[in-house]
Image 1 (cartoon, one colour):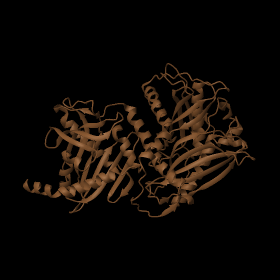
Image 2 (cartoon, rainbow, N blue to C red):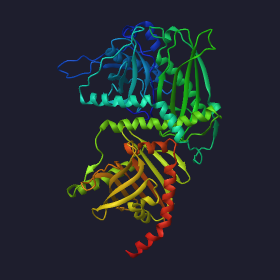
Image 3 (tube, rainbow, N blue to C red):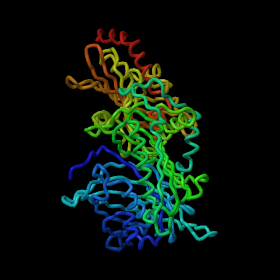
Image 4 (spheres, rainbow, N blue to C red):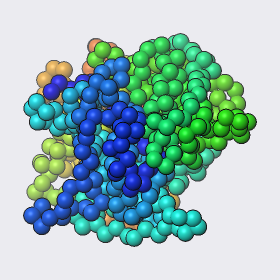
Length: 607
C-alpha cells in the first residue's frame, strides 16, 4: 500500500463519554445515522489461559473506511475517527468503573500517517491507571491494507475519564493492578502525565513571567504580514437529535468535527492555502450541551511560527432564549502546517497580533509550544528509566569511540529536519521523533574548516564562548582522537544544584573530500570521577559538531544535540521562542573563532 505523505501528522481529541448503554445505541438506526458509520464490530478480546494475560479493560474496534468517511483530500476525516475512538475509549473506562463515564481531557495527539478509503482502522483502548474518581485510558490506533496485510501505527493517545455516579454519591474507583512489563511502565508514567496536566496552567503563567517571548529579528523567506483579526471565524450550529447520544448530550466527535472546520478556515485565512492539522493540544471539556442548544464556535490564529501556526478554538452553548448567558463548554488549541508537493512544511506569513488579548494569545501559544515538546519528550525519557552514561575502560575504548562518532553521523544523516527559526546568520532546525527531540544549530563563517575543528574540539576553551560552561578539565587523554573531560555547567538541576558531566570527546578528520570534520560528545562513567553532593550528575546521549568546508573562505559549522532530561527544558525554551540563548551563544562562538583563527594558523604552519 502506498503511504500518503507519511511525514504528515494530524491530531484529534475526544468528546463526551457515553455510558454502557452505548453498546446497544451504536447499533440503533439513529446512532448509525449520526456516525455515518460502516457496519463494524466492537469486540473486547476474550481472555483465556491459551492466550496468556490480557488486560480486563481492553477493548478493540475495527472499522472499514468508506467514501462517506473521508474529507476533501480523500482521507479519513478527523471527526469520523473521533466517533470511533471516543466509543472504544469510553467502553474501556466503563468496563473498569462499572458505571457511566465522561471524558475530562486528552493529551496531545500526533498522526504519523493518513488513512485512505478501503483501509481498515484498528483501535485498541485500555485503562492504564485508576486514581480516585478519574482514570487514564491509553488508546493505540493503527491501520491495515487488506490487499497485502501490512499494518502501520497511526498514533498513541491518553485520555482522562471521570466516573459518574448517581448524585450525591461520589464514585471511588477500584485500583488497577498492572501485570505485564508494558502495563507497569504505563502505570508508572500515568502518574507523571497526570502531574503535568494538573500543573499546565501554572506552568504557562510561570513561563510568561520568567521567559518573555522573543519575536524580533527573526528572518523569514515570507515577509507577508497578516493581521490576526483577519483570521477570525465565528459559526453557529443547532444541536439536533442525530448529533446527540442516548442521554441527549452532544456527541463529542461531532463537536470536534465542527471545531476542526472553523479552525481550518481560520488557518486558511492566514496562509491562503489548504492547511493540514498536525496536532490538538490539551483539549478540555468544561460542560455538556444538549439537543436544542445552539453552539457558537469561535476560532482565530494565535501565533504563526516559522513552519506552523496555532489556532485557538472555543465553544459556547446557549438556549433559544438565553443568548445573553452563554456557557463556555469546550476549548482546544490546534496546530496546522502547510505542506508542499514533497510533504515538507512551508514558511508561513508573519502574524500581527491585535493589542491586548491578541498579544496575550501570541505569548501563550509560544509557552504551549514549549510545554508540548516537554510533555512529549520528558515522558519518552522517563519511559525507559535506563542510564545514558556507559562505563569506560581500556577494553571497550575502541567500541565506545566508534559508537560516539557513528551516533552523531546517524543523527546528521536524518532527512526530516525542519527549520524552526533563523536570526542573522544562525539557523535552528528541529527533528521530532517518537522518543527523542533533537536540535541542529547552523552557521556559516569566514574561517578554514580545520581551524574551526581545532578550536571547537578543545573543550578546555569552551567556557570562553559558551556561557553555560564554567570549566572543562581534561581527566584522561585516551589517544590523539579521544579525550575524557569533567565538565561543570551553570545549568541548574531540579535539585537546585549546578550540573556536572563526564564526557567522552571523539574527533575525526575527513576521510575523503566532502566529508565533514567531526567532534562527537557522549557521557561515560569513570571510577575516578564519581558523582559528588554539590553537583547533579548530568548525562549527554549524543551531541557534537560537524564542520564542512563550503568554499575556500567559508565554512559551515553545525552543532547537534539529542535532548536528554537535563537539557530538555533549555532546548524547548529556545525552540518555542522563549529564549535566545542559542542565538547569542553561537554569535559568541563565531566571535571566538574569528578571534583565535590566526593563532591556529600559526600552530598549523609549525606542524
